[in-house]
Length: 399
Ligand code: PGA
Ligand code: ZN
Image (tube, rainbow, N blue to C red):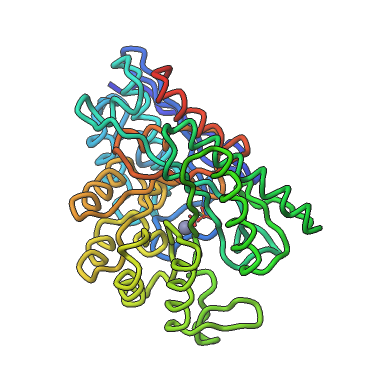
């Protein structure tokens, strides 16, 4: 039985406050987790409150429903209590940041009580044997870095790596190789929020640079490395401008679909996330019709880890994969439901970090527990490597 839930403000990787939760149980179980935070957040995400408000609201409404009431190992009941305490469908009362921190901390406490690693507690004895392929952000801009590319993320995708550890090192090697190529071109490069290079170059030049780096590392390592994108197009879309704003150029929806399809063919992209605005199911469906056989078309801001929005997408063929961010929806149970609906409809699940992160490693366990095809959690930088190194440990049975 849960005997105490303690909440506090801690720092995230951008230096902003976020919510950390500790869950303690009667039998001595302990779990700790912290909420991440997005910058290019979707319009339909669950609501993140200022951390002090979220903590106060959770203390008032949620903790009384958990302490001496619910077993930490019963994740559905924990998450049901959080939902009941909130009473809305978007966690606007308790805050999705308090909710997700408590939900994940309870999962860890439940695992601790069982003496099992979190991925095993969440995934059970019959989960698959596969490890997710890590998508590593190596160049980017958008809302994550000023004066860089319009496309938010260029992602290294080591689809041919023989092991998760080799895949993780491959992404770091692509990241390092890009630094050399930019040096050769006399391009100075700062880093964005997720540790990707944020050079002041055009999107067209970024395609060239990433393509070259990926080929070089592929030659070095001897297995296939592709690359993909998170366009985060909702951030580029401006209704008053009549389309997607790339600096001085504005692309209409049709032009955007053509552009993305062209890039998929020219660079053999293996992954394209949020290629169109978060309200444009139709545009998504048209692009998926055109390139869905060759590449993953993934909905992040489109689906926001929400089963209703995902079902709408499935109904019209809007994509063939979904990004899963527990804090977009508020609980682990909701995130699991989204993965399950996705997989039943042949959509690949991509478990994802946020641009604002902590050292928390829950998503590494979630990716293994759900047998997800991919995990997107950066390539370098401490709050990203926390998850990547945890994946290496899980694969090594050392957790
Ligand atoms: P965010 O970006 O965490 O700033 O929303 C990540 C993403 O768009 O995938
Ligand atoms: Zn995204």
